[in-house]
Length: 415
Image 1 (tube, one colour):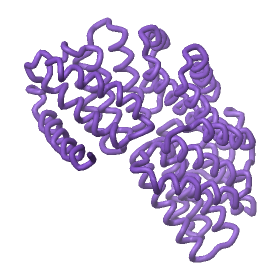
Image 2 (image 1 turned 90 degrees about the vertical axis):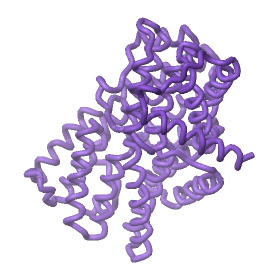
Image 3 (image 1 turned 90 degrees about the horizontal axis):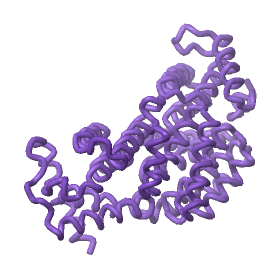
């Protein structure tokens, strides 16, 4: 039952934490009792199945498997070692708990790699890229696995691992404005789904197609893609992401009432789900914030302002835990200050958003932030005038092929 599982988890967490503080004594001398080896292998398989269906059980299984692995000679379970330690690191990043602890387990996984072993190479490189992506290190040196390593991983049957990597790398690329690179990854996902009949890759392809079209501001197509993704998504986490993204498209298309209905559907899922990790929840948070900004601009008042402030605070808490929407959330926070007439705070927040986008390489959001700065004509403290921001915005829009001058707030239209 749940109380027994929670009690076991508490013991596992204490044991894993204590071992991590004594790295020189991390591994036991147990060569791998058959029961432990079987338990590790079962939990590793279950972890992969639970990545989107049951995140609570996933955390419990990770801690249990790592505790067992710590008391076992790694050579007894060679094919699970890198995936478990590297995946444990990614779990810390994915949950927003601690990037620092995640890095320690990545270093441990690196120590245990078998030289020249293709599976170990991919498992390690893939999980390093995932942790970098979640933390906000989006440059190509930190974010890519060599194509030949990916191909080798498919040869040994690493469908789940390759699918996970390709999906997140597509997201990294589209956030940076590498739309062609994102499309290549989406095509690879579709090929895996077709070749191997792997449903998760089909779902992943639908998700990244939706996110790509949103980033490109191809909004009608994005709305259709969100509806398709919601249809094929079977887990609460994926449904929340689908509905949040659908609401975002609806707000940007000017249909705040439809977005409100969509957000209520997302909130019903969130209310009944035990946990929604920050990566999936951030899509809903952006949709909610965009909607509340649209309501505020249409009918200013204290109630609308307070709702928008609450949504902004919730989104900012998520942005501190996962980088995926960080630049957009900061830019929307600046929009909130601008709509409320808080010019100085709008300037400071927009300057922070621009710095964040530059650090991430998030070119589409950077373009939109520069357009805000040019339109508002306020001092960001960066020595740039409105004409400079306008020139930078136009250059980015042209380079990325984004629709120039597309507006996202009534305040910008009126300016």
